[in-house]
Length: 449
Image (cartoon, rainbow, N blue to C red; front, side, top):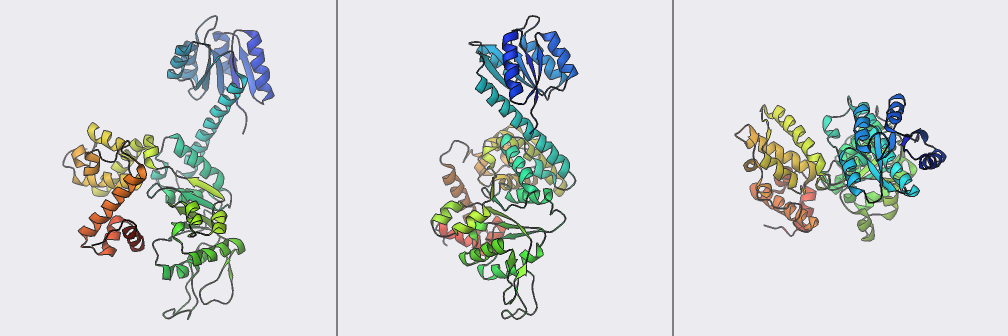
C-alpha cells in the first residue's frame, strides 16, 4: 500500500520537526505549516491525504481550519491535536468531521496506530469504489446494498481473494447472502467467462447427490440409459458453488477430498478418471468445527475447504444496511406487482429497524413484499407488518439470539405444515427449503402431527 501524504500544522517548530522526522522514517510524504494561512496554501497546492492539525494556532483555531479543509477536500482525513485535558475541544472536532484526535504530548505509538487505522479505512473505501465500478454492468444492484464497515470488510476480502484460485469457505446464517458473495467472487475472478455451477447439498436426496456431483456412465444403474455429466464437469475451467456443505454425507466427503487433491472425478460406473479444473467455493450455516469434533465432517476436508474464510454477518449486526435494503426492495416489488407505494410510515420504519431478523436479508425481503401486497394506503404502515414485528417480539434485547432464531424457525415450520395439511413437500416449498432439510428440522424441534 502506498503511504499517505501528510500535512503537519503545528506552530511549535520543535514539535513539528519531531513529528515530521518520525513520519518520514515510516515512509510518509510530509508537508509542514506553522499557521493557518500557510496550511491552506499547502493544502490547496498539494494532494493531502491526512492533516495533523493543532487546535491552537497563531492566526486561527483548529475548528475553523478543519471546516475549511473539509469544504476544500471532503476526502482528506483530519487528526486534531489538542492540549491534555481539553477533551471538549476533541469532541467538537470529531463532530466537525475529524477522523481522530490526539492529546499533547503526542504519544508516537498512538499516532502511528491511528494513522494506520485511517489508511486501512481509506483503502477499504477505495477497494469498494473499484468493486462497484467493475461490477456495475455485471451484477445486480442488490449486491451493493450496504453502507456499514462490516460489509465493507467482507467486500474488501472478496476483492482480494477473487483473483486467486484459492478454495473459499463462506460462513453465515441462513439468508445473509452467502450465494451473493459466491457470485461476486466468480464475477471478479479470471474464470468469469467460464461457468458458475451451483448445487445445494441439502436440497438433493442423498441417493442422488453423488450422480449430481460426478455424473454417471450409461448402464451404471437401472434407468441410466445414457451418460450424464455431473456438476463438476459442467464447471470445468470455471467455478462450483457447494451450498450447505455441512450437509454433505460422509461417504461423499471423502470423494470431494479426492477431487480437491487429485483434480479429477470419477463418474458412477466409469473406468477412467476425468481431469477437471474447477475453483471450489463452499458455504455453510453450520459450525464445521463442531461437526468435525462430533465426527460428522472430515477434518482433512474441512482444512482443504477452509483456505480462505469469509464470514457474512447477520442483518441484526449491520442495521445500518437496513434503510438501503428497504428502499431497494420497495422499488423491486413496486415494479413486480405494478404498484406505487411511496414508502414506510415512521412507526413501520422504526419497527423494522428494531426487529432482529432471524431470517436475515431473505426475511426482510419477504416482509417488504408481503406488506406491499397487503397495504391499502400509499405508505406501508406498522399494521401491514407481520405480528412478530408489530408486537415488538424478538427485538434486539429479548434474550439469547440462538433461542430466538430457533423459536421463530419452529413456529414458521408448524405454520407451514398446518397450512398445507402436513404435506411435507408443500410445506418445504412454502418455507423455501428442501424436504430433506424440513425433515431434519422437524426431528430437531420434535415436531410431529
